[in-house]
Amino acid sequence: MFEVTQSYQFMLPYLREIIWINAFRLKLIATFLAIVILIVARTSQAPSDAQQRRREAGPIFLYRTSNLDPTRRIVFTDNTITIYGWPSRGGVIILREATIVDFDFLGLSTIDPPRKRNTYGTAGLTGNPNTAMVEEDSFCQRMLLLGATWFDSEVRYQFFNAYSAAAHTAVEEVDNVQVIEPTLRERRWVKVGWEGPAALGTQGDQNAGGGLWVLDCEITMPGICDDENLVPEDAGKLALARSMEERCQIMKMMGAKFYHRLEDFENFVEGSRSTFLRAWEWKYEGEVGELVKV
Image (cartoon, rainbow, N blue to C red; front, top):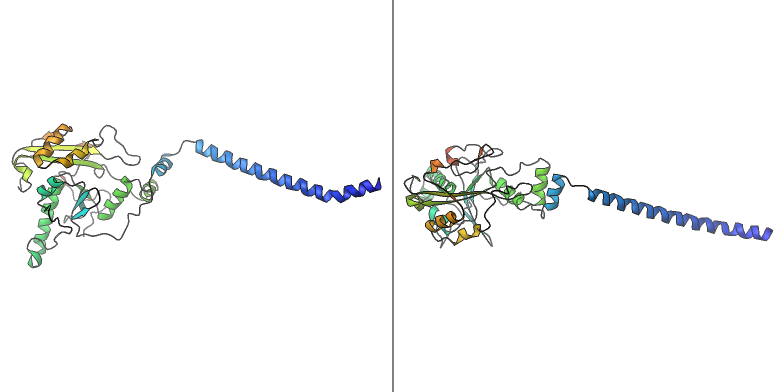
């Protein structure tokens, strides 16, 4: 009996160690299962709007760069052409997806397109800076007649590009109320075709005859979508137009609306003007802040 008791006492530390190890393993298993249950419970819940927009967001896009250039005129990428205008009132006017028809209307060379604007005007270095400003304002007005967008600044335009591409940085800044999401006018896709003398783009009076065709649609963005007025699926056909006349014909087939005079066009959505087409008549303030002058 004494020997059995001694054997039991000898084995007791080992038995305790085995019990402790098994208890530790059970705790680990229990903790792991609790974490799994928590993860499943969270993922099964319906995400908030902000969470959903973050999930839909693409890669991080650092849009606030030092690559700001107030002398830009034309920017070429692998699949599009963008024209810049710099009004004296401030901000920057952007014509995206520019084509040969836009170049002709604006008097820009298609053989040797200017990458930079001439800050001295047509008179060159000896010219009057005020004359250059007048010339630039005239150029900006013609851009607006083609459906260009007037942004508060070049930084705001970069934010617009990032947000429309669903970049994490821009989407999260809007979710956190650090930046105001693109406004109604900023996110419109507007194309204009001119008939008659106005199609030349050189007359001071754009109502000298003919009329204009207008496509005014909504650009789809994270959390913002007008299902009833999306950009046409065949919008790329506009790039095939070799003249303003052909553009008008294509736009007509795409469902564009016709107006005899520019004054006849005034499209309001949600109580606000939906485009910048006639913005030179009324715009002296920014969309979300001040018009930044350069």
